[in-house]
Length: 245
Image (cartoon, rainbow, N blue to C red):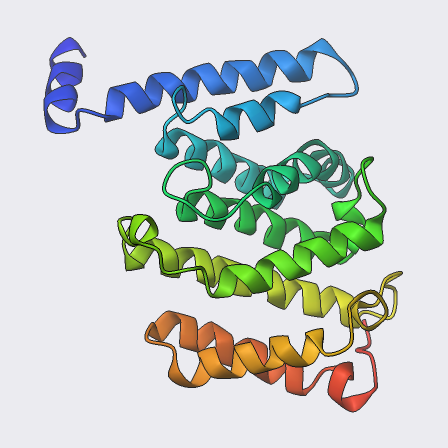
């Protein structure tokens, strides 16, 4: 075991550090969950923002663990998990633009996969509910931020993370948009995007999606954009009829 650790530390110098950070973060999560029957996970914001203490790889691992949990838990547990994670993660991601450290594209991609999974499983915007703002505002902010993420600014600092990381984030964002459109078309949805968005916002989204499907330089982005474009053309925004469940 010692020899293995020495070999690992020489081959992957950041691996043991990341594992140690991950262990510390998981213990922190465990302690906070056990402290109260109603978790108050403000520590999640600290975990995501304190890049000096937790590396990007550690944060991605934690976020991916929430995605896995949201895939495997019961419906009741899913509701509790969404209340525990989503408001704080959205507060974190809404707090600034994509960058190379605090809001790294791969961290945002991992968060988007949590959001996609919970929206897809719950088939409701209620999973976005927050104590700090009404549900309509949260849905509106989530929609607008995802549209913004489709075309992040091409700054010199962001270019350092590489096109692969940016593409991974954008694909995850397209998945969230797919989930949002599906939920919005459900007859059971209490909220309608047509009612909470400004005139022209949905048409703008359609234009962005069509452009990505036709001319985006990334093949995988084009594929998922084409799926969303097809869904949009068959949606009630065009036909006027909501889907049957």
